[in-house]
Length: 385
Image 1 (cartoon, helix red, strand yellow):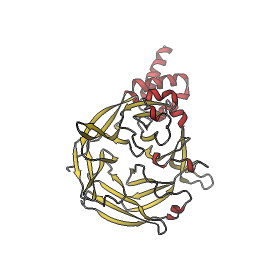
Image 2: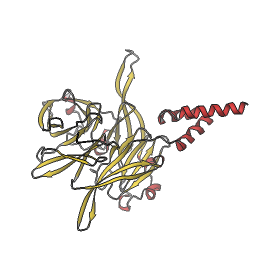
Image 3: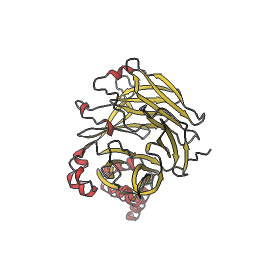
Image 4: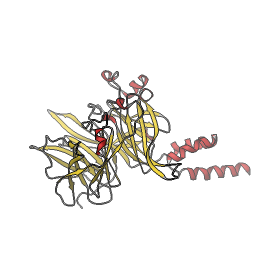
């Protein structure tokens, strides 16, 4: 009778734990050996599902020329691999951004740069009116919440920022009005732009759109655009003491998890992951927002010489493994996976297993330090509404 009751208890416990998010469930492994075994079995027998995948663009040979491809990757086999969900050919050279099921492309149109918004699951394209001059450097971002029928495109002219006056120029395109507006705005706390080691030209990381805000990594700072008020704010990014000069600006990343902003600082030592959260101040007994260090993944532990062959890293790249060639590219909250872009492949790092596994190979990945793999939400967005 006792064994029967134990069995019923374990079945009930398994049912309860199957409904607990992966991250919280993993923490319960330390309760007992039975819980550890049960949770480990659940991980493989009832793997968590996700609507998040990856997307990257490539140029591949075709007959006498080449074709531009955009490839969507779907997560398979308990995060051990990715499969190609869709591979679409097009004539647009630059994939610029990905946001809640929409992609932003750019192409030269005479002396101007033209932006195109694409919904891969409905195969709908929208070409926007000509934007800024092609030779005018800009960082373009897509703002789309996935619920409202309209989107916005924001172009940031970081080279034209007046650091002394604390102003910045930008263009904004709301799909609701279907026209570009050029604006100039003040940046509160602009004295941070005069900080030691700040380099205004270090602006090459993908932006993040969340809850009506657009976030950009600008050298050692975080620039925030508030969509509703069309205003800006500057914030210092966290750093490890005495490691500022070891930070690699083109390999930093932002993402959202557990309703909080996360930042990954890539250095020659490894990857430091921070979150921006409420922390209780014992003196004032109030909560304050501040950066907290959550994880540290050392580069030498992440990619060792023993797994070069497993990842099929080209021989000419074997001795140049660094944060320039090993870059975080997307985080999957459902699966507790951080994806990395390596030369010729994409790999997934499990925070649960503490292991890096190759999930997709493609010679087009990582050819340049400016190539990016983006997160993608598998959501059918109707652009014709």
